[in-house]
Length: 276
Image (tube, rainbow, N blue to C red; front, side, top):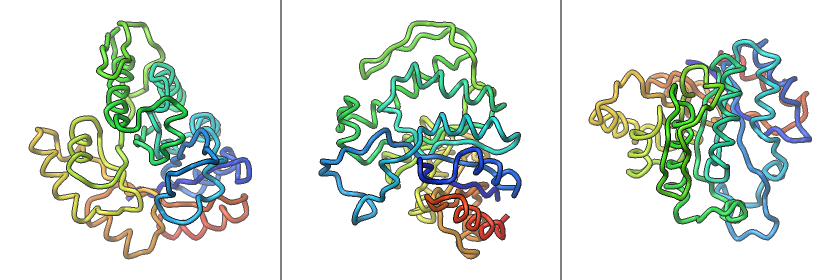
């Protein structure tokens, strides 16, 4: 099972370059980064984990800039987002960013997609909270039109469209792997089957109960069961937990690193290296 990592990289933590080099030197599989453009101070939305919102949420580096640095100093390390809030982006510009990163890294990028939890952040981007899921998938379809081998038009249902266009570079593999994050439920499972290559359950929650349902829906839709990717995300590891994920058929797990300066992050990597 491939062991990857995630971290809230900020202006106060280890740098992307130092982290990426350390990960590849130790044999870790990948680096996934979260995104928050800003955190409004006046906020009614509660932190999902409860209590005060941790400091790092308001200080995160832009994931695509940071991953570009990581790509430049590594050769094999996987690169991903966990997760990209597509509804907060211009999809034409985002498609270009993703295609460029995947092209320059030789096809190492995974697009983790999420709907977001911070209503105030989304509203500042002009997002209608009640339709953010539909907007997310509509914009993902638009991006796929731009990644298509031939100029392809797309008429969206949420007010965004694109004419048939020359849009290069293309992602190295035609389109990056797409993993959908979110809590288990019928609506999410349907979206995974229709629009993604797999599921990224945060902390691995709900995996045991939901995975059989997802596999059944996947096969019912005519999709090859061998192509379903299940990637537990932001996991605090124990030997028993990782063995359980392996028994469930997970080929990759993403371990949570502390949002800390270099010495603490490297100590954690050395502790996690026992799982490689």
